[in-house]
Amino acid sequence: MIWLSVVAFLVTLVIGAAVIRWSRGYGVAYGAQMPQRIHVGEVPRLGGIALLLGLLLSWGAGVVSSQMLGDPSFLGLNGWTLWWAAALLPAVLGGVGEDLTQRLAVRYRLALTMLSGALAMALLGLAVPRLGLPWVDGWMAINPWLGMGVALLAVTGLPHAFNIIDGCNGLAGMVALIVCLALAHVALQVGDRALAALLVTTAAATAGFLFWNYPRGMLFAGDGGAYLWGVVIAFGSITLVQRHDLVSPWFPMLLLIYPVWETVFSMYRKWVRGVSPGMADALHLHQLIYRRIVWGVFHDDESRRMLMRNNRTSPYLWGFTLLTVVPAVLFWKNTIVLICFCVLFVVMYVVAYLAIIRFKVPGWVKGSKAED
Image (cartoon, rainbow, N blue to C red; front, side):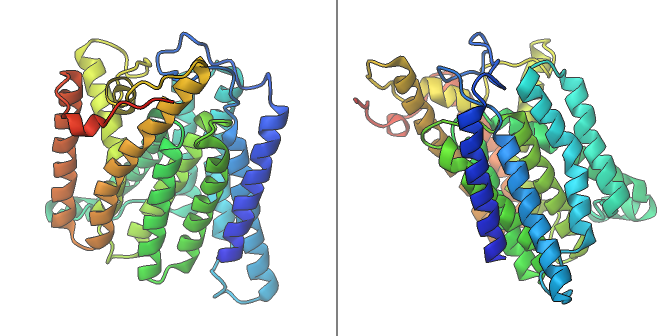
């Protein structure tokens, strides 16, 4: 598992360097007028290519090694690993296509992530077998298509949730890395070394990407990278719950409550304003923190000034994520406790959001004004 992680990290790192070196003029048609843009200059948005190649090569190396050793107990990376790779391709390639052209409509990208979900159900038999609620689980046992529908919804929606929070250097990448490691930890607790290997290599590839993304902001994940994180984590979460009855289905829900609730809340506030859910805006939580909590940095160079404020925004959301990851890892078997923490997060999010909107953030949260 360790050497596969090293492969994933190094391949992503090297490919990321190549993308930075050779992609000038490609994938950078991100207009300055875009409301969610909080950087200056042309930065390649093709980090998804580096992440994809890092994963494919490390997973492929794991499958080849398992076959050569002739020992199925060697992580158990066999044919099903290749089906994972095949199923995630439509979503990731669609995201990369958007990064290159900026012309792929949201509905087409949504259709491609849905295609990845459909492939996962067809090739891997992916389905959510239960929700940890007796009256619902009974219906799901009688109607298996309900579990398939929940799985399809998760695989379709989670990539777009990661795309929504991918607005600051290191934000979505660090959230993905933390979630992958948490899922891998529980997978090892229940003896699923194969699933843990795929998740740890995803975390390692993400670390290779973050080397270029945070704090220097030399490479962005783009839609391709965000969709890769969303699809892989959705696959991993559903597979963990499907294979192991001991794992509560609310464990991955609590792990992912930040991007999931950010998406739901975003859809709600746009619906209230009579705006399409696919319309980009600058009212996501990380954007509000950037504009209203992180103090301005005094620097003559505008690009440098914006970069430093960008970098200071992400740690606020990392801490917010850890508030859900820690209890999720501690109580991964206990559905009631996990549901309570999910509700608590939703309340905390809404309170924090309203406080920022109304300029009622405590002074200790903002800290002292910084100069550079």
